Length: 264
Image (cartoon, rainbow, N blue to C red; front, side):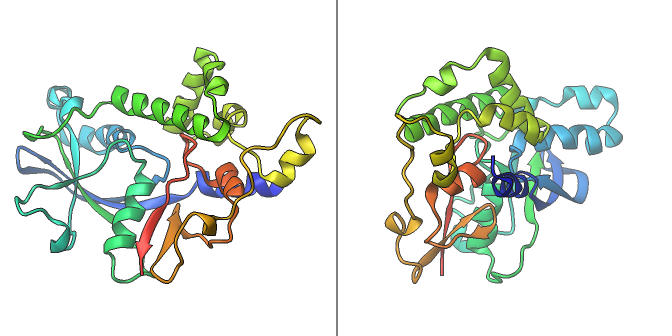
């Protein structure tokens, strides 16, 4: 395996985003603003679990902490431009099936006028359910991840055989490695699922094996950068970048390349 490949994987895996967060319950403030960083691949519910025991535990009695229903929590994105708020003043909710890095790029790049400045993403953690809030629990996040993983396998290889052939403990290892941000444990399994860059694949493939996916630059898929540009994990990506290389080094844990297209 190329050292360059491992280097860029490590950069991607260990990158973080800045968050500014306050906590409310039934409209009342529970915790003043705190600032912290989160791994880009972390899901919102992972962040909630960390906050629950790192901050809420010191501000609540054990009975109060146990009374919090994990299925009721939700995150609100705040301080967005008026053009992004609905006519009915419905709060903009953080998508629970997006990892936090994707949400960060979407909101900070699209709505931040200072393109060279990376402010914290401002969030409110609500501990009580809103009328239109869907259940936000760990199992639904896990099911969404596993579903996306199978979809990405179908796109890469035309089959989900690589994922269905994994043992139960291997799929659990994938999931727990994301929770613990353990890159070594993740790639023990993910190396069987993700494509290799064409230059490496040509050296390692069998004589009768055809390399997949093909080496295709982004410019064949995305429009000219005069109007917009692609951002992947907080980085503006040149249109000459090879898709198979990006997939092997910068894919999200579910295997997808999740770009934000930012208008100029």
